[in-house]
Image 1 (cartoon, one colour):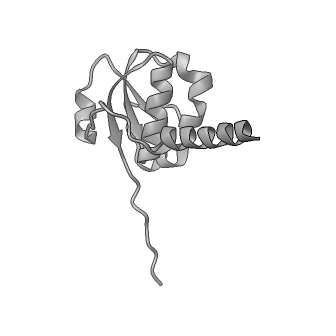
Image 2 (cartoon, one colour):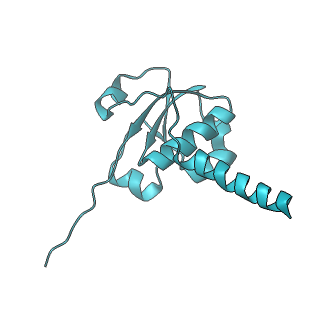
Length: 118
């Protein structure tokens, strides 16, 4: 019984670490710097509705949930990620590093919530 509890607790701790602990050694890039990038794949990890609201024309749209089946279509091993929040950044960087990609930077484009007033 203790073994089962230990496995469950360690699995929960691992999942929390993967999702919430920031990845070290990844530099932040502004949206204006993306136009000067050469020989690096710019991957947009945002969901399609977020990516169409704030488009980046040079980016390859590849939502986080599609990385596992489409990572082989990324043309370069050096990548810059476009994300919408810190959790997407952490998960995307860890997943792409697992597949052998070198993360050169991350550009976080957050959508501002629109507040409608009557």
